[in-house]
Image 1 (tube, rainbow, N blue to C red):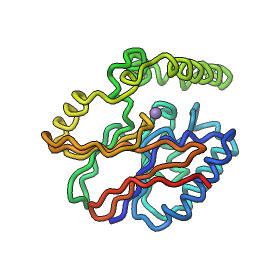
Image 2: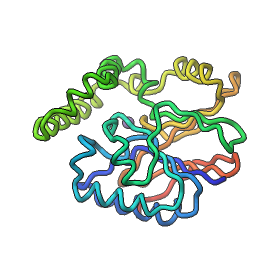
Image 3: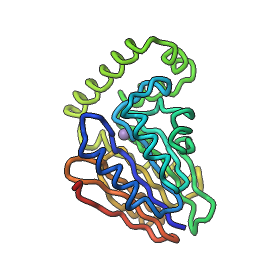
Image 4: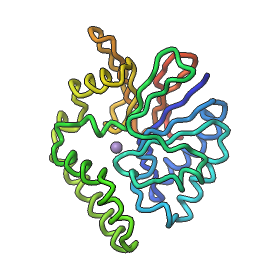
Length: 238
Ligand code: MN
């Protein structure tokens, strides 16, 4: 079994370099894998499955061409991606968190990572709000112009907050990570969101936390898993 995990591509029409690298990645690195997992923030922002731009349709078409079984777990920027867009991409929508239990030597917990940044109180408040099915329903009923304005506001706020928030506030809280692992009875976790690609080993608890990197002008990272062997690989963008 050969699996590939990626996250935090933040695809955007304004970033043609990353988009090109992603399309090439799908036909090269991801061409022969059995399963491809996208662990959130595939897009820089997402408003609705119902109004796809030609760019979003192109991404769906490229993904649909990949032979592998594909899974998508939403991030904090594209949590509004639903079953309908996933269907167009040929991806199965996963809940955050999800556990891979079949055909693995050790079960693996997948999440985007934002739920574990618990020191960021402002964001956790927003996360609670947007996870509420009632507010989500109301948002989906709004006209596109209002949704666009809302999305712009959220992006500006996020960019401004990033400048003020401390390194610690933006990172995973180990205690909450361990609680989650204990609750699901797993030893390996794969997530993105923090943009700090690294394999963290917790010797005492015998836990492994693998952080995927983001895609930017310097390159991208992906996690390659073949028959239980895990490798974090970095590639330049060109
Ligand atoms: Mn994120």
